[in-house]
Picture 1 (cartoon, rainbow, N blue to C red):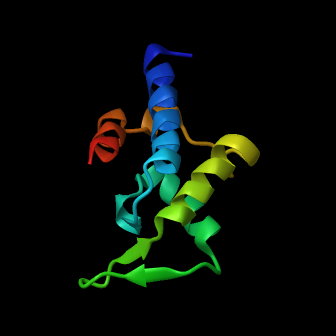
Picture 2 (tube, one colour):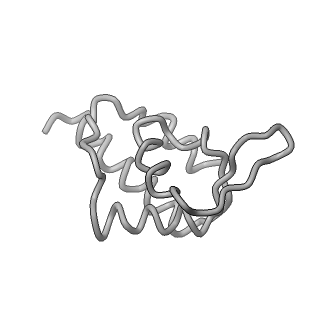
Picture 3 (cartoon, rainbow, N blue to C red):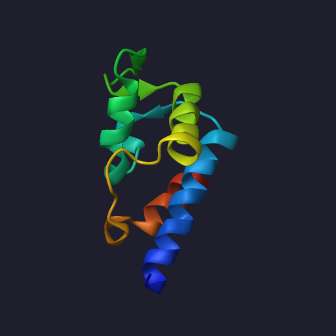
Amino acid sequence: MTPYNQEAYRTLRAYLTHLMTNPRDKALEEVPSPLRTSVEAFMEGKTVYHDATDRPIIYAHDLAAWAHQVIHISGLEYPVALATVDVASLRQAMAA
C-alpha cells in the first residue's frame, strides 16, 4: 500500500468514526462523493428531511448507523479507490 493510500485509509476510518462519535445532521451533499452512493443506498426507506433551500438532510443517528455498518458489519458495498479519497476534504468535514 502506498503512503498516500495508507493516509487515505486512516483518514477515511477517522471520518467514519467521527460520524459515530460526533453526531449531527448533515446535508447529503456534505457526504464525500466516493461515499455518497453507499449512504443513499443505506437511506432507502428512511426519513430524510429538507432544509430551507430544499437540500436533503440526513439525521445524525442515521449517519452514525451507516458508519457503524461500514466499519463493523458490512464494509463498503463497493470498493473505494483510495486514490480518489480527498484527505483534505475529509479532514475539513471532521473539523466543521
